[in-house]
Image 1: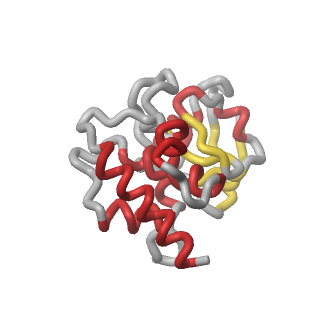
Image 2 (image 1 turned 90 degrees about the horizontal axis):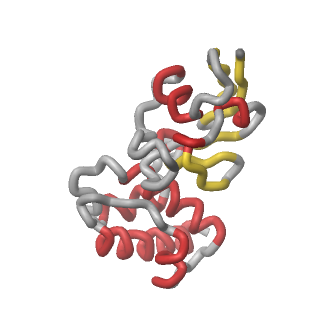
Image 3 (image 1 turned 135 degrees about the vertical axis):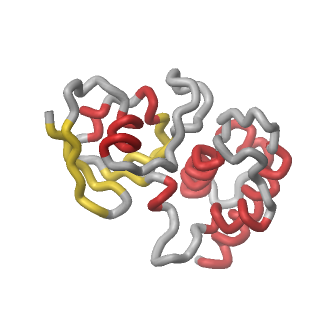
Amino acid sequence: MKISFIINGEQKSVEVSDGKSPLLWAIRDGLDLKGTKYGCGMAACGACTLHIDGEAIRSCSYPVEMAEGKIITTIEGLSQDGKLHPVQQAWKEEVVPQCGYCQSGFMMATAALLNEISKPTDQDIDDNIINVCRCATYYRMRKAIHRAAELNSQNS
């Protein structure tokens, strides 16, 4: 079965044997984009978060057949023209990652949040960024989310 979509601005197709298999594997194995991580396989941890039509989606439980014709953005496509996305810049400035494994999912969830709420409060962050970090870098992430909102407003 051939599934076609736009990913990181490019039209792509993947051949899958089962349309019910997770989009995560089509992206990681079929397209060799390794930034989106496998964490739990149950859409609980958020390591696999990417954007589908601008919405944060947990790709480990999203059937690849549902991606047909969609616009997908992974962490590799978040930056534009060699310039870091404000979320990536803020993560760098605030030295957020410890082990870093979950961070692409957090950054993708944050970018989606900032598209909806340009200046999130701590409560907005608590309500919307529900990914899991085993290293517990939540304090630095909160600072980075506020910094990303500030960078976004400077770029507008």
